[in-house]
Length: 189
Image (cartoon, rainbow, N blue to C red; front, side, top):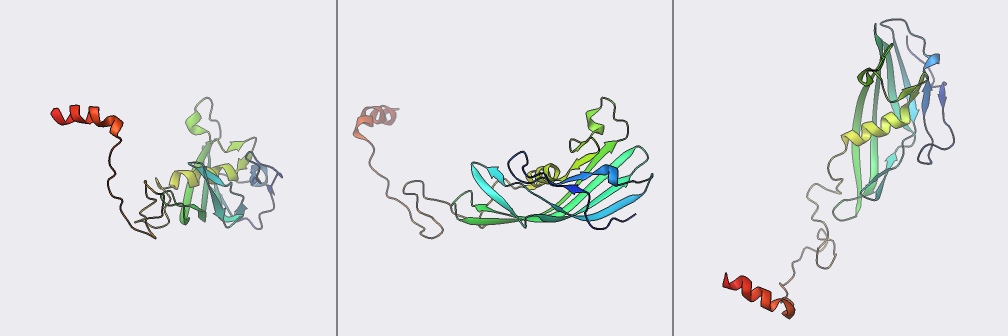
């Protein structure tokens, strides 16, 4: 079974972080065992905040491929999309862009009981929260640092200038004379 236009999505005006949320009503997707449903959907992604800096996803909304497969013991959800995050470089604060290709999979058992491993945190009351799932999938794929270029030199620790634009070093400054007594003790040992 293949889906058509993404007509069963609800976008409440304000999400958990003040932005739109994309939700799929799974009651609209009626599948029998081993049937599959595919649809191209538009997912609202939240701005990510990392280290106090904002990284804006583009395009917004993000086109994604949603696949729902009915297994004999539950349902398998797959979500694939490409996204670019625009924000500051971790080292020099210049503009940086990070391209990510996301492929996420979730499983929801028909009768999960008390076992949390058989329950998807993104499915509640037959509704699949695509925005939260996509946000978490992006967060898992992030590198340690988002950089403007792999060999970014960062900012000078002494004067704060961008070392990519103005590579330089500073003369070692004379130490504070108040520390001279401690320095003499260190020199003796």
